[in-house]
Structure formats: structure tokens, C-alpha cells
Length: 309
Ligand code: ZN
Image (cartoon, rainbow, N blue to C red; front, side, top):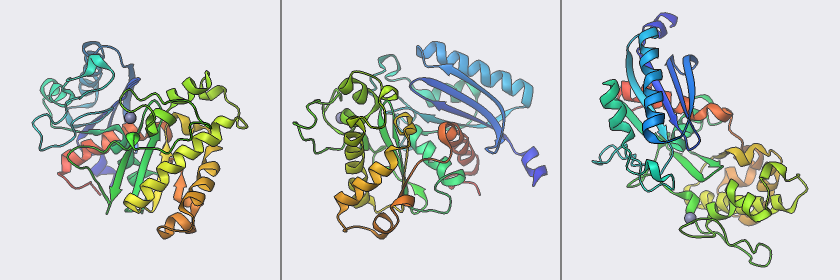
């Protein structure tokens, strides 16, 4: 087994985040051989730094076999699309139309697989974290934005492209919450009401400065519970994992679970009703799920479509 790992091709993993680009090199995701972090600045600057890291790693450790990229979105993650691997209409204007996949494939000369950062994180939680042994689950991140990776029947699912659960409609009581939301497209969609910047704009200070007793959190739990109820009825998952910066506030979990039970009101799939504590959970991998997901994407590229055992 150890021999096999030593002979396995080197995998390059890139978590392309809105704040940082995290780079890792490994033969298997359990043992990282090299890593680096670069700030997300102008594309030419950041991509050149990332490329230099992977080229250096290749010189030190040996030739890279495949690369996986778990990218911020929106990004074309449909392998059948001519724009597969291209960043789309993101508010990070410098990055719009940057073709991440082609850039690394051409510069490094190796096969590259790309998916969204949340799909990458979902893969990592499935293989190594809070969804081991579970075939139907959803990984949600609540941070600068809100997005989800959805795994059904053991496989990540996408439609024409990745889903945009962050933009689902919410029920908002204007008297209780006069904040009109911060989504540039919809105002008070889920992301507009419950992402990190929404918390900060509504209460005029960052979430990290709001104590657990602050009314901000009950409202936050209500929106996240609406999201969980909607996901429960749409997908019937066995588990919903909620990560991201906002969920560092662990006291949110019991509030969300309690509110979900109120919203479901006894109607829904058994896992949601019978086991609320194991139905809505934090991630097991924390901040490294994205980069591990990128390595798993590289591994999938190496082994074809099905995940490696
Ligand atoms: Zn929106």
C-alpha cells in the first residue's frame, strides 16, 4: 500500500478562492508534500505566482500527473461545454472570462479537472469528512457568498451548470428585518440576507463582533433554517453540512436545528425529522476541505470519471 502511494503520480491541487489561492501537491490527499497560499489579486499576478509554485514543486518532487481546481464561481463546470473551466460573471471583475482550466493545462502541460469550490469541498467531506458513508447529502458554505455542492446517489450533481442555491427566495418580514438585502441581482435572496457581508451591513459591524445573545443570530438562524427546509424538500438529503466563515459561530447550529423543526412541522423525510443533531452538522475538515477537494478532482482526472477508491 505504501509502495503504491510512493509510486502514485503527483497530484496538483488548487483551491481558487475569492480571497486566497491555496496550492497543494500530494500523491494522496492524506499526505500533503508541498503547499503555498497566495492572495487573490489581479489574475496575471496571482496565476503567475501559482504557476511558479507548481513548477518549483515539480522540479523538487517530480513531474506532476494531473491537476484539480476547485474554483470560486460562477464558473463553467460542465466538461461538455466549450467554455469548461472559464470564470463567468463574477463581481470580481478582473477575473471575468479568465479561462482557469486552459491556462494551467497549457502552462503545465497536464490534464486538468475543474469544479466549483463547494463541489470540491463536498467531495472532500464525502471521502474524508462529515459525509463518509453517506450517499445523499448537501454541503453548504455560508461566508462571503452562499453556495452548495449536492451529492445524490454518491455522485455530485449539476444541472446545465452548477446550482445557485445562494439565490433562492426567502420569506422576509420587513418589520422584523427592514434590511433590504445586499445581492446586486435580487436584494433579499438567501445570499443577500444571510451571507457574511449581509450580516455586517445590517448590523453595522462584522459578525465576529456580535455576541451570541445578539438578535442578529436568531434572524440568521431563521434564514438558514428556511434554506435547510427548502433543501430538505427539494433533495431529501440524509445530511446537510454547513461550513464557511459565518458558521464558525458554533452556537448557530442548535438555533438552526430548532427552527428547521418548527418549519418542517413534522412533515418531511425521516433523517430530517428523527435526528436533527446528525442532520445539520458542521464540516469535519474545516478550512482545508477546498484544497483536499482539488486533490480529489485531480485524482478523478487521473482515474477517469469515477472517484478513485
Ligand atoms: Zn441573489
